[in-house]
Length: 419
Image 1 (tube, rainbow, N blue to C red):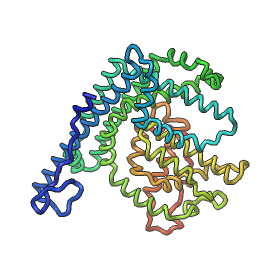
Image 2: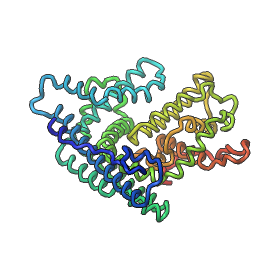
Image 3: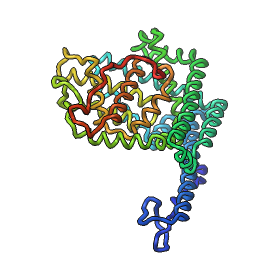
Image 4: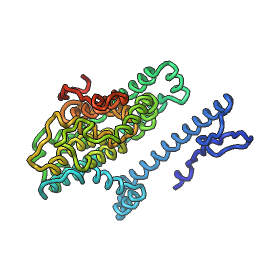
């Protein structure tokens, strides 16, 4: 409580008005400002943003320390579990988990109770591995490594005048700066995942052998299944520890670097949303009576509105799978979609999802994708997602409608994203 009461929350800077007084918001300009007033406004706004970011950082550290103290205090209090539930409820953890579950599991449609039990057990084991990884990051050395990297990345983050100077040099300069920073973050994330996996594999195996995870013990003996599960779990927690702390830096670089491309795609998406499925070259016998709404919902919620890159990638895969599931439900279980039918449907679903900043999103996912996922199923569907955004970007809305949506004749192949 003492730490929280010492936090100083910055006030939004006031704005001089034409009447000589001061307005209440920098976003409510009623008339143009003089060059001097405009520079003063920008400086005050930047100082406000810096102060807000510093307050967020301190508040975030305070909450992390608070949550850590609940589980690491010695000796543990008899009411630790109850205290933890109250704190989690206050922070909205339960509602966040419920939203994630609704996005990724409600549409899966498991065929048998056994499949549902196995998936529930898999999620339970995954969260156990995440909790173990979280405790690893409570170690002084690990905290220091992450803190030093995050502080350095924040210090390198461009200020408003830096972004303006880079834009003056051309959009390529700002994009290069963004890619350099994303490359550093991606390399650090990969190294931290490898560090945890190399040092903690034995402990993680012991966790998986507990009787609670009996329904999936037969799968855990498969090395590929185990590797995917444990890497997915550790990667998600590493992104929570590192990426979440840097999301404002990443967002500022991506939003400004790909602003013009995103504005162009958003304009075209809003126009294409008015078009029927047939305009997307979806065959008449493949048209969905529900307009693929469940797929668009997964894309909008799981890709467009989630925070972690790894969660966004899983949502892309889940959306692609939902296309096949929905088609079977609506057209009969004997019906199957061909590979040539997938991309037009996927593009239609991306249009219906109307995600914000899709071009910047593609850059984020392509760059921060876990190295083990750059080929295989996740890599394939991420390439499909990028192909959908690229196709929308290249559409000429002034052309004849019959020629406007001519899809690529070359099918996507399962290749490395680096290629």
